[in-house]
Length: 232
Image (cartoon, rainbow, N blue to C red; front, side, top):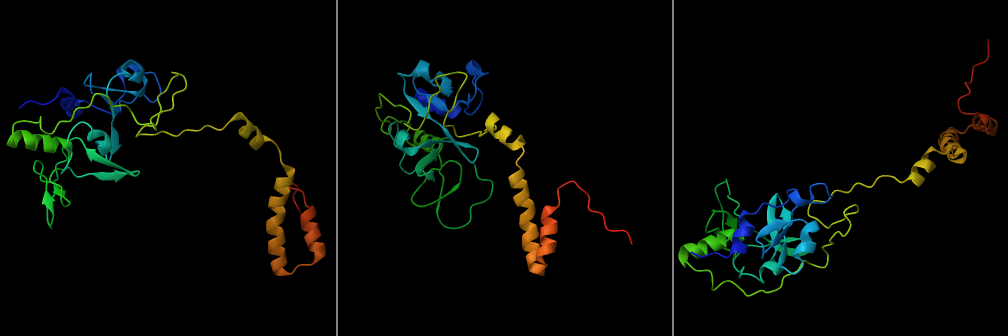
């Protein structure tokens, strides 16, 4: 029961862990599989694997998924249930056993007994490969020749180790405030304070129909100066 090395790598390699070669770099998670080297790499490693076949691995509900369009170039994925994420169809790479007993209509996965929709019979690529090897003992009829496979145009590869920005499945958005914003916040703004204070007074007093003299008195009060009642 022969299985291609790249197919074994997709099932055994660990993704979304820090790359040991770029442990001090930003966005160093392994979310790419080099099919020629049969190993997982991070975006910083792409330069050394530029001429190799590269397959991007994504994350969906804590499981590894691959775009169906990319995987179809390597192997026949018919009868494997696909899911839509960000307008792209993806398939799971590994088994996802279902703990609850299946109840209702529909199909059941041939390997892990997971409930499926019609007309699918496998919940992941690994389940289909296992089923074919168990039934037919040969995968050659399902493999497709693919000499080149590159990352999608939306995948940005960092070129500078000090300024990395990658389109990853786990995105951390941290945008610190610039110096100009902090200076504007700390600078005094009397007009803004006066408008903020006068607004509620005008609305509240006008609702109670106070006189113009009382309104002018309230508007002329300065912040911080206590107003004392007259002695009786």
